Each structure stands twice: as structure tokens, then as C-alpha cells.
Length: 242
Image (cartoon, rainbow, N blue to C red; front, side, top):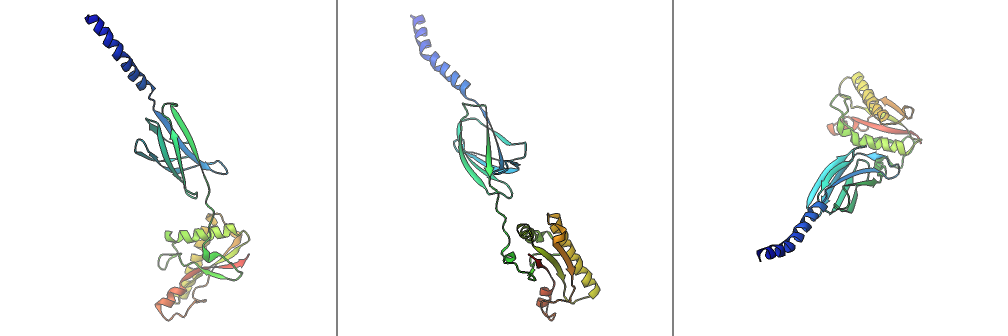
């Protein structure tokens, strides 16, 4: 009788245990790899990823590099919300389902669209002989050391020159009338030259650029107050040809 009962319970329990074992064997981890490329050229891009696994309630943050995708492990079938961002490209967001019980690895490539270059509005509607004050270009006091806060506006000037290939400009440095005139002349020349060098380093052909220092010879306002003197301490670009 005991043997019969043991056989009876064995027939009930063993299939259940076998099923559990098979389920464990069928559970498979998935190595998920992701990278991004330029939408037009397919060139690989260094890209920052923020990925949310909805079912697992996990967040993965990492960066891919050319020839080195970002990778992480999933332990269950999941829905992923993927946000990809790269400098100079529009941010992309995609949703995908990754099944962990069908493949040991899963690779995905996001295609990113390049942002359109945007010239600063102050540099539009250009006319020959027109002067534009670079009012967000800064130097250390009484120095021609260019400060990093100047880069955004100079980069916009680079874009303006890039998108207007026939544009030729003069970079003109000016000072107020305080101090030695010869030193002011040299200071204005060096500041204009430093900006010209920045433009050349960023891809602008040198023969499209001229630079001159005028010291205090071309004031924008009378040198009769500190406010007016600030107006005279300036750097401009002047349109020479279009």
C-alpha cells in the first residue's frame, strides 16, 4: 500500500518539478548592446544613452564610442525606453521590446539626425561696410588673453562664415582713450589678431579674414564717462565683401 501511495505522489509531483527545472533552463540572460550613427553617413558617433527597462523598473546610463557600443545585461523580456543624445545632433527617443528567452545577445543601432547650423540673428542681413559689435567677446583687463565665455559668440561667427562662403570680414579692435596711446594701439591689434586666429583654428580660410587695431582713433561714443568708455572698448567685425 505504501509503495502504491509513493508512486501515486511521485506521478503528481515529478512533472511539476520537471516543469520548474525546464523553466529555469529556458530563462536566459540577454547582453544588450547599443550604438548610434549619423543618419546620412552612417559614421559611428560618441553618444550618451539613458535607457529605462519598464518591467524591471531599472535605469541604465552610459556612453557608446566608435567601435565600442554601450552594453548591459537584461534578465527578462522587457520594454525599453531609449533616449540617445550626441553633440550637434537632435536627441532621439525610441521604444523597443527585447525578449530574453529568444537570444543571448541583442544589438541595436540608433540613427541620429544632424542639427541644422544656426547663425546668430545679429549676423543676418549682412551688407558691405556694415560693422557688427561682438558684445559677448571678453578679454582679461588690459590684456589680449581671450576668455572662454567668448567662445559661443565666436562659434556663431564661424557658422556665419561657413554658411556664407563669399563673406570676407575685418576683425577690428578698439580701446578708450585711457593710458598710453601706443599701448592701446598694440592692445587693440593683438585682440583683433587673437580672434582671427580663433576663426582660422576653427576652419575659416585665412584669406577671408583681415585684422586691424585702431586704438582710440574710432570711438563709438565720447570718452566723457565710464559708460561711454565701455562702449569704446570693443571688438567688431566689418563686412568687406559678400
